[in-house]
Image (cartoon, rainbow, N blue to C red; front, top):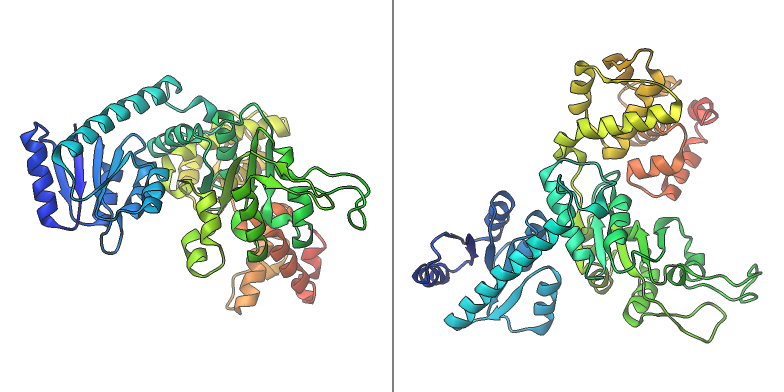
Amino acid sequence: MKILIVDDEQIVLTSIRRLLKRRGLHNVRICDNGPDAIEQIKTDNFDLVLLDLLMPDVDGLEVLETAKPFSPHTEFMILTAVDDVGTAVQAIRLGAYDYLVKPIDNERLLLSIQRAYEHRGLLAGLAGSCTRADRIPESFSHIVTQNPRMIELLTFTEIMAKSGNPILVTGESGTGKELLARGIHGCGPGQNGPFIAVNVSAIPETLFESQFFGHLKGSFTGADRNYTGFFEQAAGGTLFLDEIGELPMRLQSKLLRVLEEGMVTPIGSTRSVPVNPHIVSATNIDIETALKGGRFRLDLMCRLKSVHVHLPPLSERQDDISLLASHFLSLACKHHKKVIQGFSPEAMELLVHKGYPGNIRSLSQEVENAVILADSNLIQPRHLGEVKASTSMLTPTLCTLKENRDRHVAYVLTHTRGDRNEAAKILGVTLRHVQRILSQMKDDPCWKSFLDTI
């Protein structure tokens, strides 16, 4: 049994390690700070981590939240002087097996360690029983990966999805957050119900209550029929709230109330309706920054983030690029009715080391463009050239920030062949933001010919 003890007090580290060694547990390592603990847990395979709560810089809860997704089968036990029910509940929600308050009785500690080790074996067995030979959980078979970190993350996500607790998925634009959400639906408590995906940023504030809670016919001008809101549509299933970080503060309190009460009241009705979908949310913004900046409510985030899953960017999954490229090649060939055997070694080398600001979505578009351009049975480096806009305004020169912004937006729109929704996702902004930029560009005669082509 491999154990890591994390505490900023040397006397605690020494006494617990001595106790464990007396009981025959010799494979014990110690760490006196949170950042080092996170790195050790990410790179080593510990059975158990004994974790202090109050530490400078990075506390125990931050260590747990950051490291657990990288090592889902490692059990975490909180050892702390903080006797607080709320903190204990938060720790358990983040994946801790137990929460022990100092001073801790030695026998109580040893008994808890024994039970945690037994629990770890049970979870490992559960994960093994529901995965295929390549270890990717069946519910996530639609996700193309051979990356060990991704496979561990998917295994962790499947186990946590079965609990039915709200899950927050974070990651850069194009990392596959909706694909992961569909996999969560497939192994969660609502797997036999509907999967309702909602782009929160695309819902106007004035229509929020009507769209989410529903309305009765005649309840306002234009309400010519009864409408069932998203929460009721997702009854018995999963409600996926994409771009949740874009939800205005004024509307966050309305969403929080529904999540707390489990009831919605359609506009024009006096009757509240119980709702129980499994809530999965996603965002590409830095949640911690949004919380500190007062742009997102902490109480709402606690409701949405019972489980947190962070998808790594494609730059951290370089071993997946060749696999993903072959997958997208097959799809593009089928769509464009072409027969292409694969990539030349030089083309694949170029793909693997190419930058993808839009992550997997950018790679997919790169491969599709290559298929369109291909004039042989193999994709060659010449088929992977940059797509150039038909305007000299994209030529790099010294320019103002606004001019640089306009050029970048134009480049992305050229890449997406005028698809504004896709461009917004790649740029990491809302559709309304893109439309506002385009409206400003229309005032510049230099962009008129370009804007007429998209």
